[in-house]
Image (cartoon, rainbow, N blue to C red; front, side, top):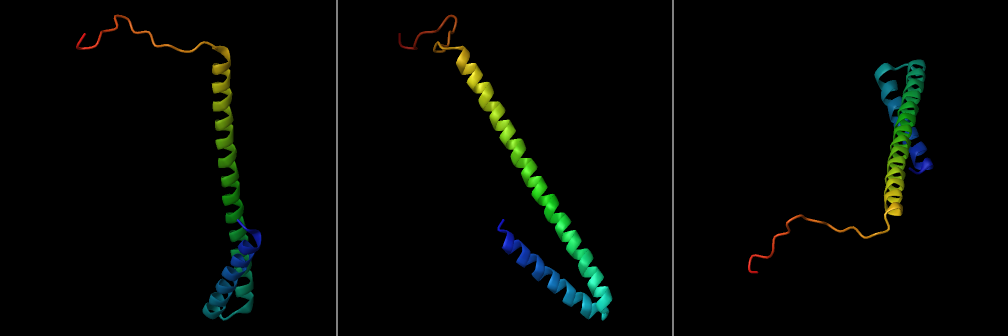
Length: 95
């Protein structure tokens, strides 16, 4: 997210909210405090959303590094190529 765009969008949203609130209530004080509450709610929601995205990314990275360390440990132990041994291997139909 590009920070100036987020702030401009937030200010635009608050301006529309303030205009609508003023037309509905007709009071500048009511408009001011309701717009302030709206700004706090917007910032709280934005913070929670960013926190959730960061947490998800950290969890995905931990999961990826665990998978790589397990895979590298298992390949480091066995240097011989793996072969599949099947008991009583049946021959081809035509032989």
